[in-house]
Each structure stands twice: as structure tokens, then as C-alpha cells.
Image (cartoon, rainbow, N blue to C red):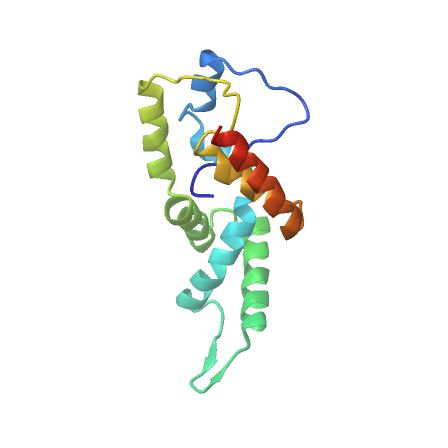
Length: 163
């Protein structure tokens, strides 16, 4: 959410300053992004618009447009063919570029990582939820509990936080 993100693991991951600086390293950012998200699926969605604009996919005549699912299917076929047989296709490259530069804002992320590298990283182990961690934990609980259970749990957490 807007406050950050939560990393969950079934094993404890030790964190010290050296590891923290390595985690926030801007080196190999493009590769790290590609490995951590499904960039192919995001590019596939973006490719539909690119295929329509480029004229690769027929959108229909004025007043008689092609159904959206047909556009999606046709664009998906072109995407698959280009991915398998023409990896350097300019339209395919455009889809990936738009995902990385517009949706993920890779240059902005790289700038933030460079700023973090120049800053002092402070690692703490707070005994209770911090103001920014509270909304993240609530979002996490919301996915796993009914609304009534969640309300009671949030009230207990608030009491703990504001002691």
C-alpha cells in the first residue's frame, strides 16, 4: 500500500547494515525487476494498446467496433509470436519499455536507490507496531480474516500501540 510493503518468509532472514546496502543496491536493477515481477504479463497487457495504435490489430469500422475480447485475443497472439520468434521486434520492445518506464518508473526507482546508498540505514527491532507498519499489518490481516474478526483484532492492536 502507500505506506510500504511487507516481506514474509518461513525462515528468519538476518539483516545488518552490509546486507541492507546490498538489498538497496541500484546495480542490476532492470534484471532484479524482471525477476521479481511478472513483467511479461504486464507487457502483454500494454501490447494490446500498442497493437491497436500501430494498426497491427483491426479495431473495426466506425459504429461497428470489434469486441474487446477479440482485440485482446488477436493482440495476445501477436505478442506470443513476437516473443517466441522475433524478440527484438520494436513493438514488443515498446511494450516492455512502457512497463519499465511508465508503470514501474524505473529511473525514479534507481534514483531512490542511489539516495538510499548515500544515506545512513538504521535497523531497529521495535517492540510494537510503528505508525507506518500499522496500516501494512492491517492490510495483511484483511486478506486472511472476516470483517468482524478483523475489527476486534485492529482494536486490540490499537490498544497495544497507544499504551
